[in-house]
Length: 329
Ligand SMILES: O=C(N[C@@H](O)C(=O)O)c1ccccc1
Image (cartoon, rainbow, N blue to C red; front, side):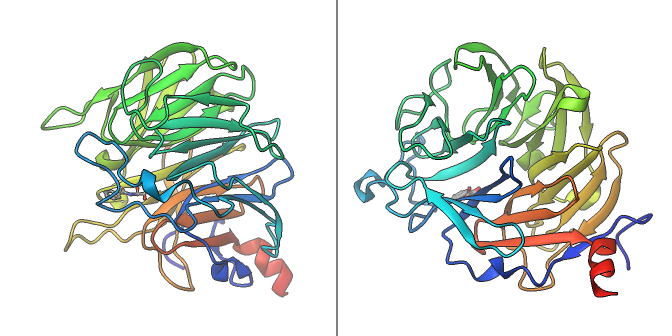
């Protein structure tokens, strides 16, 4: 088997029936405290070139909010639907995170807002940002992409976003604390500069926040308390775009990249890295169907990995070979 060193290797769990779920564009994935898979998708709405004007104002309000349930809770083994919610709330879902108390934190790039939802509540518990108003001050975001919640302090981190280049920290109750990041200058991308901060991974063991710096094709990691740049993780095999990053306790970092430049070699694939060294220890692609625009990745402690694709409208499951080998023996 190429693509992996040592004994760590994951492959698509082809018995996972989640490939034939009737999903909209899948934008966000997370695992809840019971290790159920939670999917954030766009129902019958799509993000395409007509969705926004040149000032990032959403153009399709007339459609109304998505009437399908946008948040689906699935059994991670058999993909059975356990619970669904989130209808009539969102226009263009993007990021999804679940905090240690089981609350859902989501972003909507059309509303330019961040929501905290109880797992079984209709009314949001907290909303940040001003509906449909892009901006870049303390209470306006511009297409915010993801949220991460510190399990120790409850601090909220928001990656903002497609049309801003910053990470903002709020208190657990939503009061602005600080922000860091700036636009990538022409020429080369310096530390602390972003070109679409697209996904967040909070690493409690090391008190760090890692950011998928999408169009710079890299991961940047910062000190949680201060936003101080710690290091960059970048590999040629990432290619042009690095879409999402996810951490699992024990020191593994997972990521997915985007389509290469036309004619470039780097395939669209998933990566498993050793967090401490930044080295790639495994790569993975589906056996069934193909990655088109893998948009989020989430991993559980037993190294089960899920990838959601916004163009293929699919969710794949990957599991470690030794686990599956035991089963097949
Ligand atoms: O990146 C884009 N979309 C994805 O990230 C997403 O759908 O979240 C996009 C860019 C330009 C036009 C339309 C969509």
